[in-house]
Amino acid sequence: MLSDEAYSRMMNVRISNPEIYDKVISSLAYIAQSGKAKGKFSDEQIRSLLVKMTAKPETKIEFRSK
Image (cartoon, rainbow, N blue to C red; front, side, top):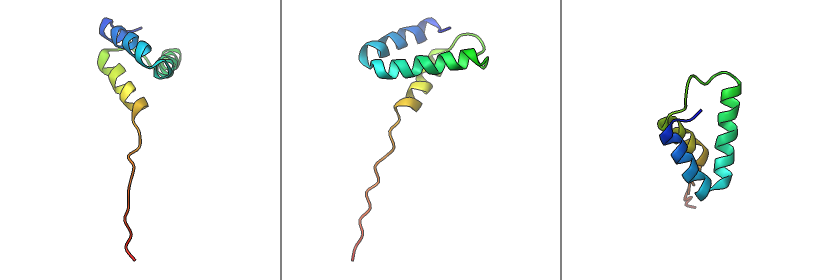
């Protein structure tokens, strides 16, 4: 289901952050079961999925003067 590079990246994520690993694996399983996956997932696809899952909304600070 994963290319060699993608598998290596996921094992690194598994060691460093198990919560994100679980989220990514469940997402990949859903994509595979729904039939949307065509072939193996590449390292680029895994990286983009990791970026989407770890993106935090930017904090916005607004100064109001009286």
